[in-house]
Image 1 (spheres, rainbow, N blue to C red):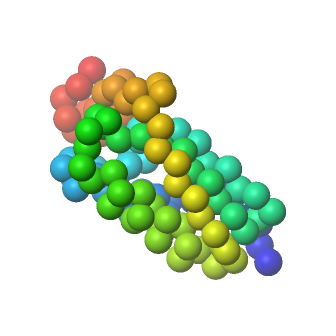
Image 2: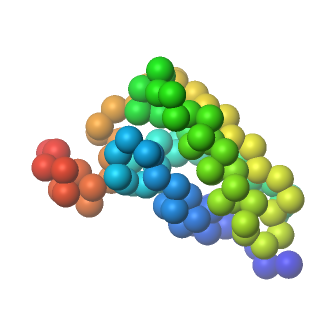
Length: 102
């Protein structure tokens, strides 16, 4: 079985979009950590743009589904955190440019 990398996971997570903002969760800076255990379990720590976001469960489920599509993955866990809180500084440079944020 090929080794699964963090970059592979992040590429797959670029297919997950915040329904309220037309950008993926990786470029928005919502993914804080990806840990791969025994090359078959993935733990993702992420946040939302604000704690009261009603789309949290939807986004977390979408994250889990995308990871589970990767061959060899047996389980995926998504933990939401708000520490540290998300801020626009976490957005990728390319998306900041598109949004006109400096």
